[in-house]
Image (cartoon, rainbow, N blue to C red):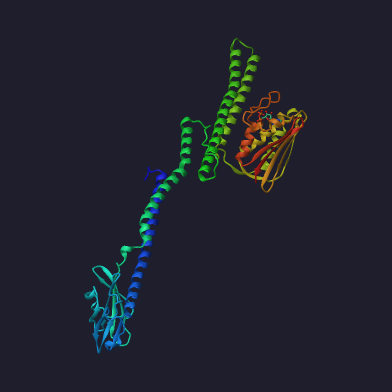
Length: 466
Ligand code: ADP
């Protein structure tokens, strides 16, 4: 059963059920027909015997009888005689009728089951059953009541098999039609199963092509439709689309990261080569080491950020704890307000005791990134304002500045990894700061958005679920 296709399995199950239904239906028809037939046999028996009852008369004198004397039968009986009309049917349609004295002596007619019914006592107008040779026979007795016939009985007998040869046409038709219908249903079932499962082949084909060729651009593309298989194909296509974009993002990230790392490495190498060309003064060595230290620091930050991204890919990368976000935000603001870069003033307004489930390390990094950007892209003597407000559903952290602002066409892009606006705006940043803010917000089930106007400043809002 293991290697049998679903199509064949469905067809086999379907056929088995259809066979069962057909068999039950046929048995029901057979049984119903048999019951009707038996009832008809018994009704015929009763009718024949009762009709024959009217054909027997008792006369005291021969002259009393005015009917057709030539055709009728006469039996002397008691102090007169019995006249059996020629309409008396002693053998008709498998029913034999015989006339008996109540002592059991046969007077007229025929009983093909005389031996078996000998001991069967007469019972007025009741169907009795007698078995012989595995066949059941119905016996119907009728006590005569007309004057002079009081002690006489008519006994009719018929076999249950009478008329089975003439089984109803419904049974015959069923015997032919049901197997034909069964075969048609099985063929139809196989065809429907094949049709219904055709999309599965398409899905398998597309999936194996993607697998073999590792071409994540391929789609199943079942087209219009709302059944389960179309749903499945659409889910697969969505999954391929997401895998494709994740794969591309990963490739982009790797190439960007290598590129970003190459620059400081090249600077360090060039600086070393240049410095080692000849003997240098102590001041020149110091300057060279300064360059190397700066580039080393840049590389270290970059590697740090990349590790942080990699750890955040796993939900358990940074363990979360229940922490007082208000206190954490205040501490960072306090520390960073000391920077006073370009004479920018940092102020804050933090609602007390906002607790969230998060990573202290990541949340500190998020706020520090936003504040350092605000310093970096702020104007001389400008302002930065940090605000944390709590709500029933979410807590909102905003970092606003009155710096250079961000053009609306790049506001979406600034959250991409390694994206930096034109070099005139950017300084020594890595282009990973806001991408990290977005990922940290997402790591905590939140989101980040920006509203900004060039020349007026920017406000970054991070929403965390409460
Ligand atoms: P970077 O290392 O370049 O700062 P980020 O990801 O932190 O990288 O920021 C991406 C870009 O978004 C920056 O290059 C800068 O142009 C813009 N940006 C970020 N913060 C601000 C801000 N507060 N004001 C103006 N521009 C900003």
